[in-house]
Length: 378
Image 1: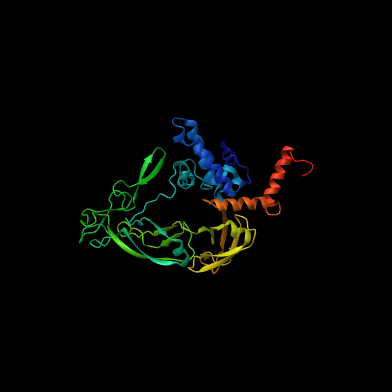
Image 2: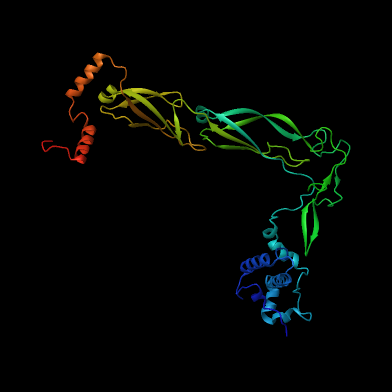
């Protein structure tokens, strides 16, 4: 009769646990009892072996069915293949937690020496008018391109890169560490899988040289501050013949002397005289499309009032829609008055009543009520 612990108890799961629950339990326990985290602890080593053995059986549907029916006897006396300890199945189990333990996600041998080139960033400032109408711009950037002398191989003309003898072209080497075999980047070829014995003198073996390149950039109508334009394959050339990266152009809008932008809408502030605000009138304002628009001001207009001019804003990117333009009037208080002007304003103040300045009268009435100073006659 077997004295082994129940595999479900070993992984601390119910018999009804599904694959994801088994995997989660295995990762948690394996990381806890890993020998490298418990140096010199024989109990941890034994526990880790038990955990691995249990997971090797239960994660396989056929082995699990046999175990559920016959228990440990299913894998004794030639009945099955659920190995114990660090058998052939250990590598597949350990790979489930390898990334969690050592943080080596995605690190595999590159081989071939071909590396994708880096992406590049170019900052471009444009005016609001250019964002409104769109434009085609020419830019010149220094960029790494494929070396013509060696066609990007990095090897001197007439020679070729050789397969790295240390890793056999895999770009990674394995190293035994305790119970495990770990992979790391090959120190001989730096993960490229190839060695260059006679480097190209033009590019010093990198397969790339720096050149100034002129590119045409199409800026569509309606772009906003921070818009990013991608030019595929216009970045740095790849190392030793690898594919090129991309070029990203980040747009920023220069400040405008008249308009402020809010999405597709434009805003502007226009000062008007006290007389225009009181009696009414009209004025013209420029628009972003280089035309003019009239704004009619009704009598009694207060400072801060906004007037909307439809469809005179910015075009919406990749759309047929257009924003609006909003004009905010600011009533300007007269300054540097002559004596005659001062006398006229003083006379106007005497003739004024609550009907001409209802907001001011109402406010100060509330102030008197607040302090309890308003007389019954008022």
